Length: 277
Image (cartoon, rainbow, N blue to C red; front, side, top):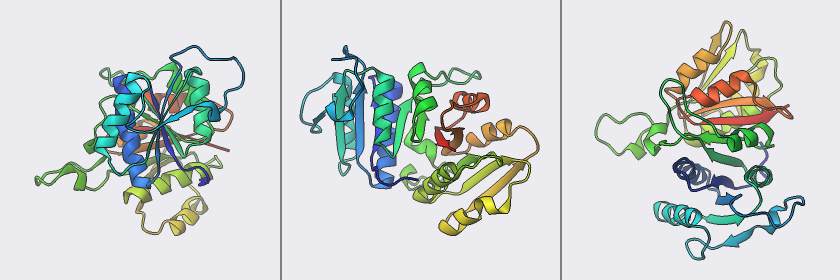
């Protein structure tokens, strides 16, 4: 993973799903001790049709300064919930997809909201989220509406505060035929930051050399491999119901494949889509 860019960025559009995504992003920024950047894009006509420059976005202090109600509300609520977090709120008139793609270039992770569950059919993912996830050069995390802090932790049974419970596993879907160091590195790093176990689901047999260097690099991370004969999709969906994060990959220059899109829509936890060679 690249460490030259150090922010967690989240898209804000005023919807409940984007506010829940912002709350998830704030927790991720706090875990990684990174600044949180809120970006509100696409609600005013663009000043020009030229190439979008991230440096043209106005910075405002949080909670001081005035911008759109949605951005203000998110910034103020998060500053109260996470008083030690460095929050940067920005707005742009550039349409959402190009604005978010440009923001992703300067982000460690870009976080976007989906619109919540709709029964057994899963939850809808908007065209903006899918468009960004298909083209971004950085990991994109899609968070469904209604996601709560306790959803990423082991359920509490003894009355102790949910925030003290261990994190649920990070689940990685891995194709043995892919050269996926960025994907594997993201999953190991995320599990290590949470002190969570990493469950790797892969079809057929995974060469021992694939995970060996990562096990050495993250010796404190418990790794469990789950080999699946055939399509790993159903196993990944099952595992996502008991996971804090599902990590899937897509080939650089291509959008998520059919299997990844199905996982994005139906997973029982937030989904990270990581581009790799």
